[in-house]
Length: 254
Image 1 (tube, one colour):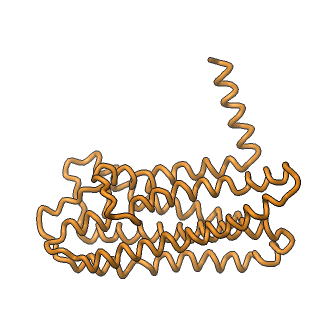
Image 2: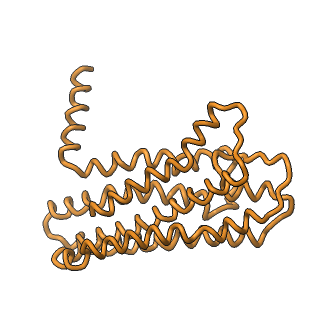
Image 3: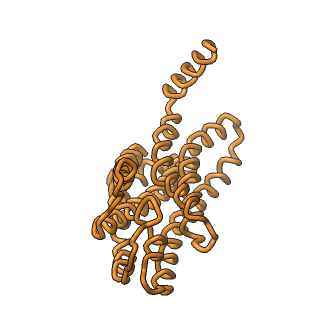
């Protein structure tokens, strides 16, 4: 679990770094420009890292399933070597998925004013800048996004369905509470991340305004990674006690 969490934290650092520094520069700058190559580099790394995160969340859900449903077999199945292999597969798969959409969109003819009405280089605003409609490229990209999102999401859903079936059979209330607390952090992270992704990319014709798209993108690109360390830290008993102590002190001072 800690190997997966360590890689997930490392991934989140690069995921945020691919967009947030440029956002901050644009906020402080009057020109707010990005080069053509810089835009597609950002596109590639942001979506590749996001895809890797989808795969990591799926693997972490399977890890939770093995730990709760097969605790006696867990050490022999989830060995360090197997865990490292899973981590490598997640990283490689994430970075091998997006060259095709990048090539499709970058080959489109773009004409002025070349203003991206978004906070980062995203497929939707880039398609809007194309001189000619590209329905086939849009369909390929939206289908691609849906497969990448729903594949790992269904894996997560299946893992937790099996976990729920096992936990509900546990006769001890304390045992059920412990199992749910173990899964709670991961479920919260999955809900935040996949919820915003599905609204943004699985339903492109849902009629979201440009302003709403920017807010949704800001949530899954910056707010969710900001909350993830806090969510996972609350699994630690010392962190829980420290948080209760701080809240208790504040309440007593008021």
